[in-house]
Length: 432
Image (tube, rainbow, N blue to C red; front, side):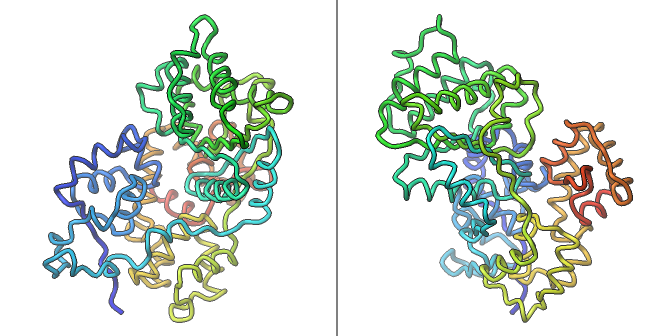
């Protein structure tokens, strides 16, 4: 089988509307979209301006923007396409992994059952924390499936949907929050009826839920809030919102209709703003931290994607070598399996070039590099980790640790910090 074509480009007729789609999907800038996907800004810019990008990156961006990649791609104007009509295109020439397979979920027991048991109890708060692209959204999907089986009402909201106009102050943000949740519950907007300026925004938000949204429900409500770190750059909004979540969790322990509320929050970094210990939602409830995949789980993912492991030599020894280099980060594993399945490279080539600018992770690594360069103080901290973590236990200040953890660059080990993988150690030692 010949190697799959590597590039796709956005059709010219979709360029203008696709650029508008970025903000409609909660990404205020192209840079935010790039950071969310772990790609370089140049790749996102090339995509949005109709220039060729790697086929897997093309599909990932389309998926993040809720677009059909087959419809958006300009197959006629790529040099490696001979077909003259859309119907003649063999899509597997471009990618041999379907978009649905990007949603392949590998169980990490006992985490799933722990989550299910938690939301089955009245008035619970579940906190899911992991670096970007570790599978938090996929776990939320599994929680959603369980909630529906139990006949619960499930509402999810990513705070990425709050654009800059919404994040101006607590009043605007909380009204938006109430309105969006109400809309998902199929309830008409009654803010004008329930919101009284003299009562304050936090109390108005409580009344709107207590006397209207929750009161209208006959089943428990699972309220899943993703990307809640989005509000961290707006400290007053973050402080007010996090206090509300904590207060609601306390109310849900004893009072109706609050007992019907189960809150799930998901975030990729530790919350480092100063909050009174009695007002923080991050020291109560049930914490869940997603671990990396084990070598056995990597093999399971490969089999689920129908990768011909015997033909390409993806045996236990090779997986161990792969794991020693890459670690068990789900996104990096998925990327490798996709490229191997497409025959974009051999396993030997993948391992030899992984930390170079010609390897399959080049765009991912450049994206993180570009982000780090925007924060010189964070670059210096990362340099310290690169220099010292191989031999000694490195101690960092909490905020730097949390920021590097959220990028997936470091992990806690033996009460200290070390580089998350040899891949990052090799690449960033060369370029930082």
